[in-house]
Image (cartoon, rainbow, N blue to C red; front, side, top):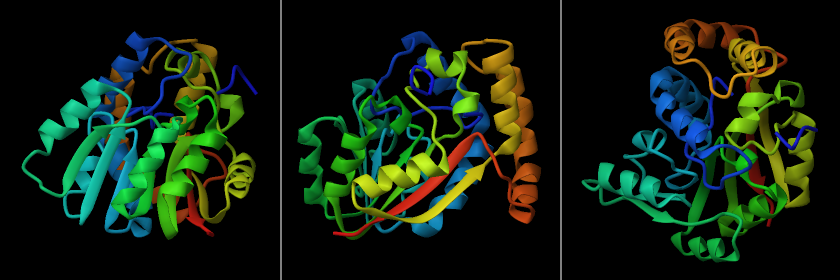
Length: 252
């Protein structure tokens, strides 16, 4: 595995890894160029989301915008700027709140007071040095039979300069995710690779061209293609992708 670690790029990072803050901030901003990817991801995970949701790594609120109809949404991030942005954006919604928290720290366990049935984390776990401890903390704040909904970058072979620049410790496979879930007492409900074309673009830019972030022009073009790509992958499932969607359920 590389120095350990999508066009589903990392945004809303709860914990920073080994990369450049400037590169990470650019990725956060460029994420706004691929809103169709966010919609695709939301549609894939929506059936597994309950009424009381905690998002680990809320970032700039890209996912929070889909949660305004929930009984409760709590977004956490270890970036004060991110927390302030999400709190300000959704101040008109009494069910939406944001606060600082670090999934790696034992103080994270205090979030169990919200009686959470779902924890969701999109492109954040790869930024956490000790992902086993992080997922263990998440499992502990979930209510009984609660669900963990993850989207993480897939395939070690895709790890390149862009992963390093934005602080990825690792990328994941179905096998490594099954092992991780088993270590913390979660049963697997779903493991699915998604966005094969995005994986090819990531490989070219991060392994061959050795760039630090995806070119904005490519992201804009790709965003226009996403509705077609989404339909194709739902017709013919792909054996690889830029991301892995992983759903686990608490067994204790």
